Image (tube, rainbow, N blue to C red; front, side, top):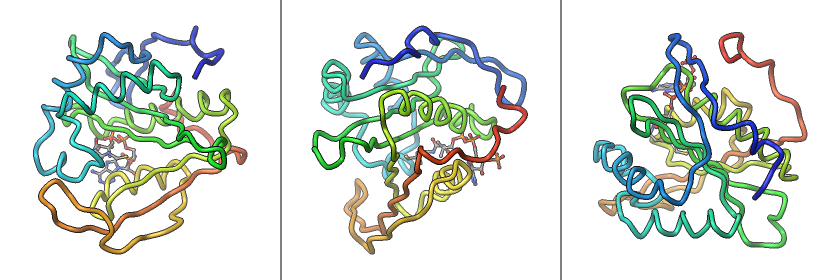
Length: 194
Ligand SMILES: CC(C)(COP(=O)(O)OP(=O)(O)OC[C@H]1O[C@@H](n2cnc3c(N)ncnc32)[C@H](O)[C@@H]1OP(=O)(O)O)[C@@H](O)C(=O)NCCC(=O)NCCS
């Protein structure tokens, strides 16, 4: 993907608590730092994520998608390390050419200060520039924080597939599919956002 917003990053953003962090595009050289970031998540959280992101192969797949222009990733840095990651990924299917999938993860030490909200909001703009009309988010029904976050951003629950997906330990969970129509303008940006 390529968009006019390329010149928009890197840049510092202010979070709800007044702290400032750097937001920039992921680069191929971020592989090892991303692995370090993902490996810092507690097992109970990694267990619920779509793939085992602590495996180097998962990051390599991501780096390849980046190279093919199918992925946009906004990385957040603070104190010299990665503390947040939000991705926008297109699927290589003709009938989904106007759709992109979003994912976001934030370091435990940087939560509840609006970082995920802000990163996803930034991805909305990048997606619109790429001609994306609908965003898709998939999560387990147990990921209550993520469901609240996406609802706050105007995503709607479209479907729940009961006991469809398995966590890393093989336990089955409900899969929730949410979408956000980007052709509709959402609520006004919260005052602390800019
Ligand atoms: C879900 C996650 C990304 C939220 O990150 P965050 O930066 O803390 O979220 P924000 O501070 O931007 O929160 C925005 C809103 O989301 C909701 N939310 C976020 N965390 C929440 C929590 N723990 N419980 C309930 N609601 C929560 C709230 O509505 C919040 O607004 P508020 O703080 O004004 O009430 C983070 O908890 C995380 O990385 N979890 C593990 C990975 C995951 O589940 N990712 C989603 C898969 S796509």
